Image (tube, rainbow, N blue to C red; front, side, top):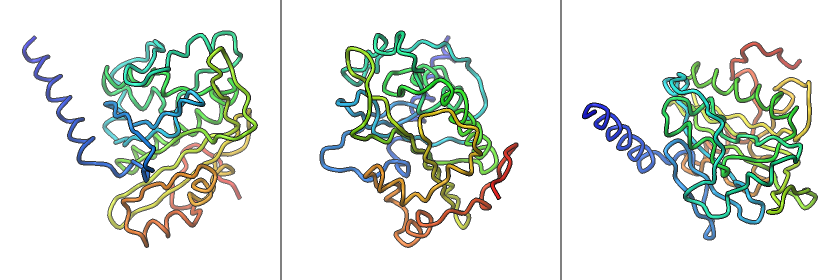
Length: 252
């Protein structure tokens, strides 16, 4: 028991250190922005739309090892009011789509449980959530293994044409984005994706856009801690060949 308690304490200290010492994944914060820090990810929550503006985390090669299975216990985020949205998803026809996938959080019981907070959920069409979105999640984990560690930002793209579900009127985004940074010295690279919330049989490469484009769509300034000239370079271009695509047919 003492050894188990010691492990838990050391684990908590490790993630507290990560939260205070590594902020590369946090976008530029506006005066009205607030961040909730969980063990596995950080989130900016939108009370109007009842879901995240963005969610960010670092994923390392070691953290891709699955030590704990998903339990599918969707619960309100204990640190954010108004996230008890279970009734909104019931019989809605939409999946409770993970922004940060549970498979990225399987390295601890705490992070696995956090991945099922409703602050990490967004209404997704089942074919999208279980199809192309899942493929992108799997590709991202492959890259974390290939490149040792990544910084990841993910979230919905809000618009004036969104429908809603449930009594709390949870907004249904028309599209989602994911921005990924490999920040290893001398090997820096970045890639961005925009995907409509719909079924798709297209290749992952067909959804790649510049990060500059995603910043325009979302109004979010990603990775402000990068040196300015490097940030400008990485966010301005689409370089598919800089990334190894596993089990994916390359777009010609």
